[in-house]
Amino acid sequence: MEFKHVSVLLDECIDNLNINPDGTYVDCTMGGAGHSKEIAKRLGENGRLICFDQDINAINVAKERLAEFKDRVILVHSNFENIKEELLERNIDSIDGVLADLGVSSHQLDEAFRGFSYMNDASLDMRMDDRNSMSAWDVVNTYSQEDLHRIIKDYGEENWASRIAQFIVEERKEKDINTTFELVDIIKKAIPKKARIDGPHPAKRTFQAIRIEVNNELGVIKKMIDDSVSMMNPGGRICIITFHSLEDRIVKNEYKYLSLDCICPPELPFCSCDKVSEVKIITRKPILPSKQEIEVNPRSRSAKLRVAEKK
Image (cartoon, rainbow, N blue to C red):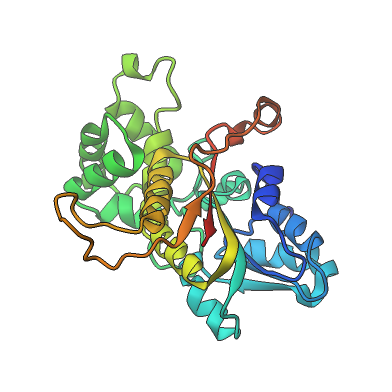
């Protein structure tokens, strides 16, 4: 099995992790193991790297790609939402750095049969972890019109969310919507032709929204950040790459909250919240890919890297 995935902002991530050869690091989104391999190369005999991925394909490929590092690398078939529980289960109670490359991987997009891409016809699936019971088919065929409108508007930031939700519900009264191309056709009917000219593919935002809903992508980010920071040794860093504004906003806001040493209303004459600043924000503005990287890997265009350091 071929697992293609170009690691985004690779050098920037490695530089910002400030890797200690004897440290313990976590790659929350291993994917094709590009970032993982570069971290593992920099670890000594006492260093450890724990790699998470909910996609069993990634786990199977990584067994070969990371085999040279032997016991220094531990593979965990789980969502990074479970980072703290999985680490404690392996008697790891402190870490020195965390990397997360959020969103869908190139491999998942390129595997047509998994239904992530609006460019290939396939069953409506979109599950990053095939152990999950809910798929894109369930969202498209069972969600109410109101819920479809909400997720397409909120997660896809789609201006035509209301019409798309309406057209989906009308179409499924006749028959189930089973494939990606069936859904694409409905979306194209819902969006007026003049609104589709010179913009992104008309299905892009709706597919993003459904994928986020199926995999609860936004719901797990805050917990991962909080749990990572709670286990981080002083000076350890957390590096997170996002690909759209919803993810980036969550990361930015959580870093900001963790950096504050008081959250009391400004009108209070004294602090009563007992909030303690836990991190220092390293990147006031996110690190963006270079023009050269975008030319080589167009999918990196929307990537943003934000870094925080444990105090």
